[in-house]
Image (cartoon, rainbow, N blue to C red; front, top):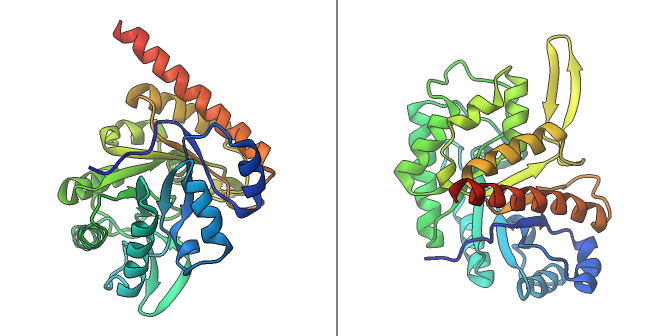
Length: 285
């Protein structure tokens, strides 16, 4: 059994914050990094990550495997990922329910896929391949989406549940993605979460989003460049009241602020996790 991430707040690591982290040794449960940023052999990125790994749990978050792509997984990319996992022995590895490549062309985006039996088979095959190659269970993240395919036959929550049942993978619940997608598709995020298998969640993500006004109504964009919005905090609090405390990451990848501002977001998550734990204990007593 691989160790799990602590049920506490974590941050995405940014190299510009390394001096502040080194000097203050903040009370965080873990740091998360994008795996593709550490697939080189050495240099400053690995020196900093090695130093972090001595003091903190680590989550690797992939963005380039193209789990939902129609073609075969890139064997070279998977080998580099295995080498990275072997090097750092992270508590968690996760990827996205999305595709990002076509043949030898790689796209700088995480693109949606239709929820059909055919796509389900492809995704499950790819997850089986990843878990076999890594020798560990992975987590799969729910996407933020802006379109719904006419071909989709399976609700998203049922699609994710069936993937986990077939492959044994866990799930990464991005609460901001739930809010973004449900707002864009005029759905109720609480109804979505009521159908989601919280017992399979190994990590939660929280991030900021941008909003554009269209004639048809608001369009939310998963931008990762601002604080977590109040409605997302509310959904998060309701979720961990049901599930109990879970490893919770603050994602802030664009227009990155000073470290103290990120820590303020992590501290807010920590307070909510503590309140959820206390409330559940009170209900159980």
